[in-house]
Length: 379
Image (cartoon, rainbow, N blue to C red; front, top):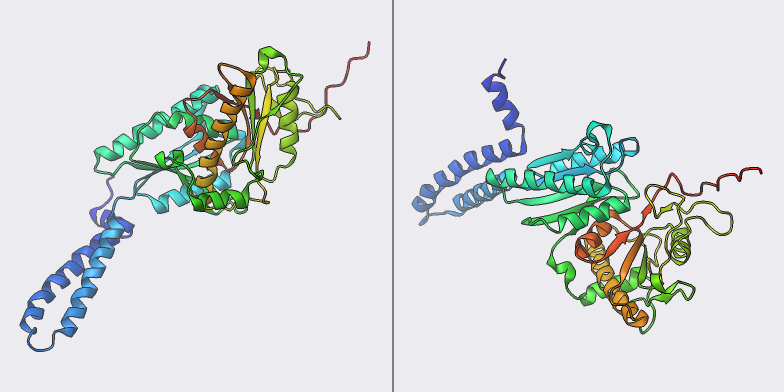
């Protein structure tokens, strides 16, 4: 049975757009009705009518603000279903529905058709295609095409999604951030646009100096060579980025980069890094050098200004380190392995900024982290 017209009307009136429509209709009539009286009383005392007109006009503008198009919000969790953070997904969906005219929720089950998980690259491609389809649909209905992403993902998946989004053209593409301290807090992260490629402004340089470790006289960190690295692997550069309180991550990443060994040399517990997706225990090839970029504060300020400054700095710092290592190692090309722990919008932005560069992100699996070495078989 179809919903009765009066129920449909009541449902519309209760929405943001419905309230805006009522305000525009009612106070436009009031504003227009006051004009003749203002003209009639102009030579008498028109102050009251002028105030009434201005009040009505302001409320008409308020009605327009309530009815204006507010873009599309896309909520996506790239975590496996058993690791999906339900409370954070709920808050992301609530924030999107509050902030935007339309919300697309990408259910994690869509990313595992037939209960067969897609590869990380295929997941990123599917999500980007869903975003494109929703953006096109929204624009065809008269929307402005602005997209705001509400993501939850591991570092590897966020980086790959950023790389994939680079090839899509959107009027505006912003990334929101779920606060580390409070799952109910969703704040603006950053906007993926050309301004991230520009040289840092003085205020941004001040933010970097206040939040990241820097060396006097060096605007960017310098590559640290690994003398024991075989010549055939010397062209590889490890980019180690730690922007969270996970301080042990740096030593683990340096060890894996120098040796290709995913287990710590002291107690043989697993670092969590996986160099071969088919065999988490497999040893990989080492890198010729590493460069470290890490925070100097307990936690980065969760502001758009900070996130955008850091994302732009990472791109410039990596480019400088790549060029320095290319000259030092006399290599024709430099392949980069990225070890990263950072706020997700920054990771997505780094993928977006380096979409056409030779960088592979090293996955970190928390399920493997600190697991002891397998027991040796007794002969």
